Image (cartoon, rainbow, N blue to C red; front, top):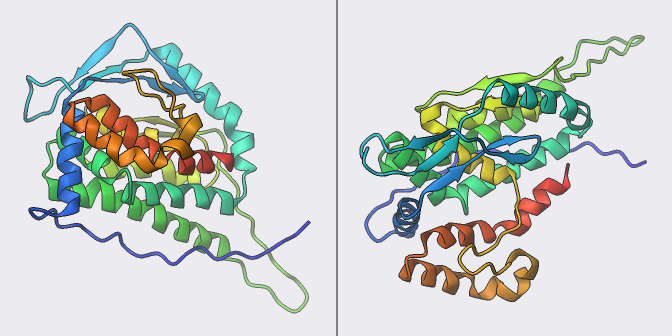
Length: 288
């Protein structure tokens, strides 16, 4: 058995992009907003890694554009709460056994995805769901959330490094372990970053979490969940499976995306954005 002492990558604040006229980030954000407004999202609960839908669907509207329908989320009941708690307790032992460096790798990769390929999408969702400007969404859902995930990894290592004093005879050692039971994260409506940080921080430390986002923030919270789960990616319009043929399609993804926008296939545009990160997302899940 090989043992090593690891150091996490240096951490710094995610740079805030300007979104000035003609900038690449502005164009990506405009495209993401157009995609998001072009179809109605269907957001299920995620319990035990599975999508759960109910007969009670709640409409989601932008606070600044009440006549527009962003989509619907599925409201749960007491039985779903019990299922989520049981799932968290069942996963507890396995998740707690994952080494700290593997847990750190998962959340560092999530930060990179938020700062990279998911940046425009999560900013657009925050602008629509919480009526924020481009700048407000940028400093919240992209920069602050990425910062939370990266700095939390550093703080975790600092906690693990803190040890009691010892002398020449006695070597005192302290080991951290997960909490008993599970953590319940009830997150607010106004900040996407806080919504992502409150459940992810205890999860990073080896705890299992039941996450209940604010009803008015479910739309942008769903993007965070999308980063954590790698589904089989398909074109819903023509049922062509792409994920199994990634290498065949990789050189033409930008061309396909442009065609999606030109033809106003908004739902497919979002799928294409996900597809660009399919390998990374599958790689993240390999740690589990």
